[in-house]
Length: 548
Image (tube, rainbow, N blue to C red; front, side, top):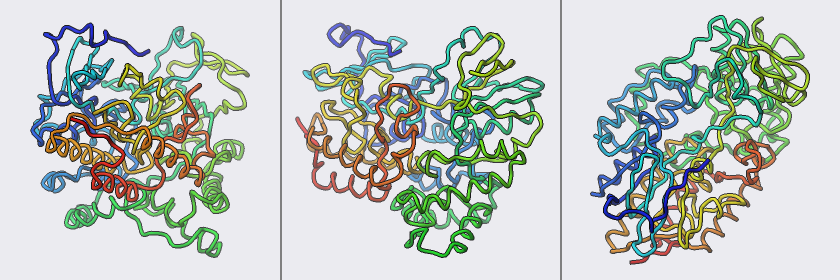
């Protein structure tokens, strides 16, 4: 439930501290935003709800938590010395290594003095007379800021399933996005995992190694691609660092934020054997990636016929790995195209279902009805458990923004403005909410991309916009209603030309009951999106009103 603090007319002005900017969130985007604004000479206050910096990589510390973008690409590019000095150990670093990297950045650039931890921003109200945001927190902070920058992340509002009875469960329960810092020992226990998207795919094999019995409750099977993770070869790492400028430029101009040779043919334009050989090469290649799988042909996310070829290839691999034909069939996705939901990278995921201590429950056939004191009841039977793990994901993209009571001109609430789905200009700004910026917000590539590339692009665009405002003596920058309408329609039109909206996914908000079904990220690619943002800025911030 959103906590609401008094409006600005009730705030004691003498107790309100003034800064140039408030940044909400101290993850990868919040830290870089802080660094960028300090470089412009602004005073900045960052608020972070968690006990440490890191955002996603602080909260998601469940066993197996790992990024699905290669380490050499999933790193800041804004500082050449930082690029060269940090040594990654794996192709896909684990949460612990990613958090060490983020903490290193916070210390290296002396960011911690400007961050208040364990503090949740509860409200932000725009004071039209002053042209400033009045920000309140759950710890009683009252801050006035010219700029409000939401760096809350796309996947930070975790959610539990709509199943009654959890409060009466006598065992222990955990959410993958709220994992205890001290860890959890499942040795010898009867454990349930609910959810088989990315966090479930990563945590299930490791829990299975310890638990006496693991029962996986699956609503929707996902396409899981082998990570083929391995230690990084020092020579390979040095080779990338030697040409980092070239690599970074190519990533910024690519579709997914990770450069890959541009495909010139559709999947159905090549012989069956050639296509099959390509899929096999990617599947077993130790240097594969999600991007290499999805970028081999230029129409895999546009044509169902083409997508069916790769989807069937993956289903065939599942049938090869999983020994029980009935279980294999349950694990094969048939209800969505590959890529229309976020594909998962896994290590020994399908192999785990060959273990004698692991069983699978299809909750589409036998829905969850209740969490009981002893365990979980489905429409068919009750299961007893010592522990339950919820790998049930997030209220993605809009959830973290709407968790704060944000009020713009005339007291309009963002929750009301977005009642039928998010509306933004460029995924960066909202009409009627001056000087509010949303880093990787809905309407930007964000979750369809290498997040590091998208984060840096947004932070740099916002920093440049603020610098331009200051140089011109402007007090506010605000998206126009016409620009917001155009961009919202454009995002939907681009999405409708793809297979993305055909899946019930968190991209569409389908995982949250009652959430508007709107495709939220921008699917035309980070390269084209960057070009659009640059053109808007070069044209004097076309689509924005700048006022003194």
